[in-house]
Image (cartoon, rainbow, N blue to C red; front, side, top):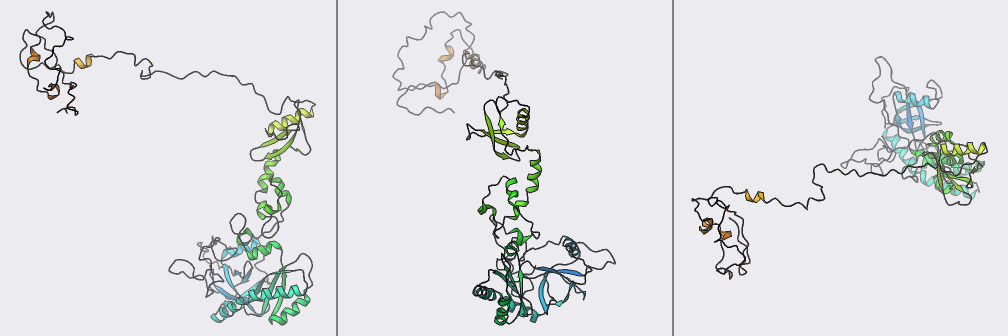
Length: 458
């Protein structure tokens, strides 16, 4: 869409950075365009039925949020963003096409504008280069003119605030927008300003909300003002909207930049009103109990919870459901008093049984008390050693052992000494002498203190 800040006035041009060239905020528009009250044409990609002529009216946007409908009598091919010269009173004005096509018909119906009315002004032509240059010169005079007009109004003692000035495209008329609390006699002001600026003067009084809509700004929510981006229907906002939503009546938080109550207070008001229909009327109603009288403190609407406190304990907030409050109020109406506000439910104490089950046996507490099974070590080597067994059962031990881990070191001081703890091998053995003893290849501990490193197995 075109913006008035562009150097050419014919819309934003794409530069190497991908941002509009004439856009002062570097293309980061929060509304999707460079203009206030931008409209998304959701009918742009739809073709008209065969034989139907396109709608002959277009919507033209001027400075800030001023928009008007004009009739395309010359059947010009107008697109969104085109700069056109339109009929004015007197002379002509320069504006930018904001909507064209069938969406204009819907907008006119929404704003109760008759498309067949003769009061709709005409579109003359697409703006020429000379028209655009004169239009830009007129825009350059608006800022200084506004400050000069404020100075003149202060000298004349007028209780008014001139917030904006808009020059017509042909520099023949200037519109002064002002706000005032009371009626202002500005006849002398018009004479002085006409002699000062040499143009035709038109004064338009607007409200505080319309002023914020024209000037724009950032709200307390961190977003652009609703009135300057999309909101066009300014409804009255009362303090009752804040009361229904359980908001504190703090004017610093509830007031917007226009000094009035925020328009967003009406957005969720219907939801709160529907939720409050099921709540009981608690105005000057006290709940009577045997423990004492209780009064209402606050309400959580969407949780359907009401908080009460006893007069003896005002700091103790007791949450009650809406059904419980209605039940207590019904008992008080019958002359009965419950023992307490809360519902006492006798809870049965059920002893929780342990869900422990030893399914596999791996969690048995006595698993460490079991004796180790030594049969596994005996059955590891069942292969008979090479060579026939003799009658001497110690015959197999006399053979040399090739396992280095089982060889004793020569430096062992205990070698060759008699071992009194060993059993006497000269005793007769009643076991089968032909049965060889198993040869366990386990490494034996080395008692040699001179060799700190243990032998490594092959």
